[in-house]
Length: 350
Ligand SMILES: Nc1nc2c(ncn2[C@@H]2O[C@H](COP(=O)(O)OP(=O)(O)OP(=O)(O)O)[C@@H](O)[C@H]2O)c(=O)[nH]1
Image (cartoon, rainbow, N blue to C red; front, side, top):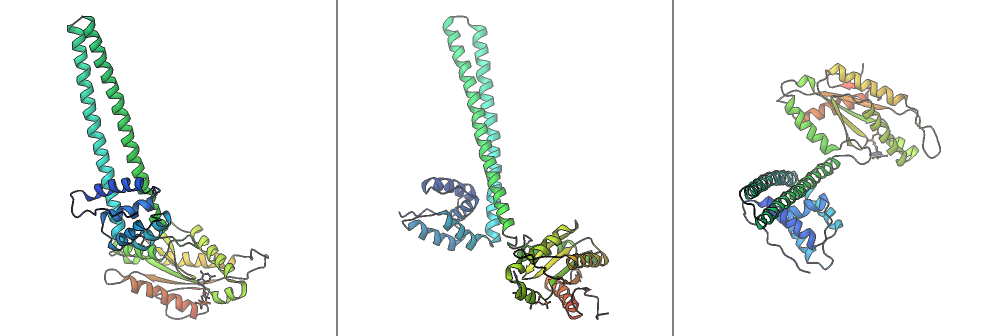
């Protein structure tokens, strides 16, 4: 089947039109109405991601046509990391909800006015004229009015349901986005979320830089651990450490897997001393844990981690330099024998 849709050049309301096209196409191509498929088809009809459009046209021209698998592939390839496309989608859905809500309101008003008019007409008919025929006519008009009112309510309800559907869709899209910032192994937020959080907080804390800190932490001798106990047990340790971070987490902090066996904790509204105490407490908790290998209950020995703390410097600072200072402090903690906490202000090992 060869299908090629007219892609809109410049209509006044591209978002709404694209949405209608998506609904039509879903019916024609028997597409599952999932948020992911919606995002892909919407972007296709909006025509603002040429590579996705090209691939979609090839898929639609193929005799097997579109399937969820293609949807997932296209979403991951072109939309997952495409902030502009996701923002556009978000705006479109918001706009759509507003316009549907407005339509519901207008329609309800219009039907209500008509119904009232009809009702007053029939009252007049009944009062002024008595003949039986007119009574019948009056009755008919009254019944029509009632039907009209009933229909209008039903219609209003239908529209409301579609508005709710769209809201649900939007929520799911937001959740799908949140998933894309989650690290699969540990459940912590990933590096991408870390970058976004730091970008936001460094702006928020420009005039209180001494209240924004970063802990970089890294499990000690993890290579040796993996070599001794196996990679899967190593994974369990990473999960255990992540859970420990989350379990002991304060209100003003967010934790991320920075990569490999390295984690980052961003803390705001906290003094350097609070942050040092937080890192020390976490260090001790990890050291005290007596973990055993799942398969044979073999004790895994003492597991430790080193910690480096950086403090934000304000507008003249950069995110890269901020991370680098915390990393340097972590390196110092490693150099001084591991299983310890160092800040960027510490010079030597003492
Ligand atoms: N099990 C497991 N291991 C990982 C993962 N990511 C990274 N690693 C391992 O972590 C180890 C890190 O090794 P190194 O950077 O040499 O550091 P280290 O052995 O921890 O030594 P120090 O950091 O100097 O204490 C490597 O062996 C990686 O393979 C992961 O997701 N799971």
